[in-house]
Amino acid sequence: MRHPAGQAFVERVIARGSADVVTAFSGGLNGLREATDALLHIMGRYGETIDRRAAYSADYQRYLSERQVVAPEIVRAQR
Image (tube, rainbow, N blue to C red):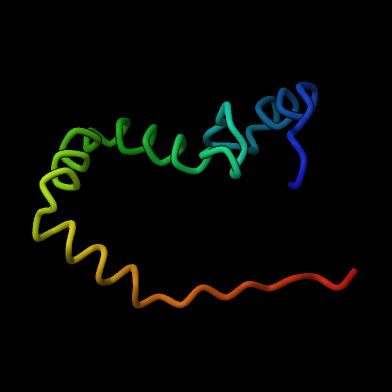
């Protein structure tokens, strides 16, 4: 969605069970990061993940290498 969702829409999505995670921020304002951090915390891996990233560990370096191999594809709908 290109615009922030209205409160009524957010409440409806939650009531329908159509969302696993609802963030306070949109994607352009680090909403995805907020959701990812929450999921890592729920999985009990937040501290470990941040520590490995901060230490620039071998695991984190491997992750970065693998991530760079993926070429994103942007598909835009006709207007």
